[in-house]
Length: 262
Image (cartoon, rainbow, N blue to C red):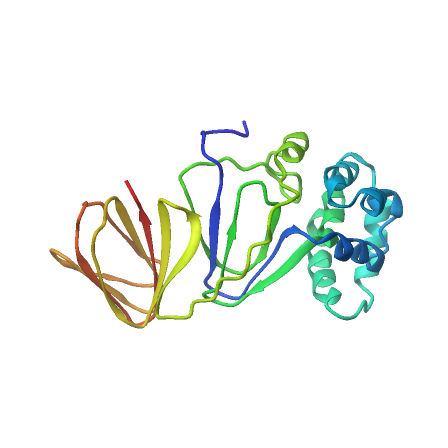
């Protein structure tokens, strides 16, 4: 039920609007501070105090296998207070999630995770095994075809907590925010054979395709010129599946060009 194909799920999420997410586990000292700031019981995170990052799976296993209803209520109360510094944004998002998943013990993992805010155009490369929660906003999410998603909670879909723990990469390096520095910008990720470019308010000649190119317009009007001329409005896409095809794209807004190499 969890593995519908043989591909790992490396993904690139590119913000179209302001976008919020939790992604990856905090550094140990910061995680311990977060546990203290949010008044989590020490019995949850005690292994971090003695064994550091080697004990992440033990800590997460405790959260996912325990009965923490009162602790969740205490966390919700703490989040409604003014914590201060950078913790208030995390607290605000936890409160929103509590409205829908108050009885889900995986809420207690959120203080241990890094909170991200992306501006339009920013992107994160989320590698396989990295825990993440997308919270708010619109984004273009690019990955190889497949549907291998292992969920631990905060969803009405199928969850598999034991498999989640077995696949979780607790040593994963946190993804940096990629911010476009040019009108034609190539992101890093999601895979060597799947690349993503963001093109804004310019004209670019595209060549040397060896597979499929998918062009998605997310703002303004885009025009693609090859054997014919095709206009793409916001939300419309065009697939060019001819090898060695050369064409020109022009946009008065923003488009994404996703290339799959053969």
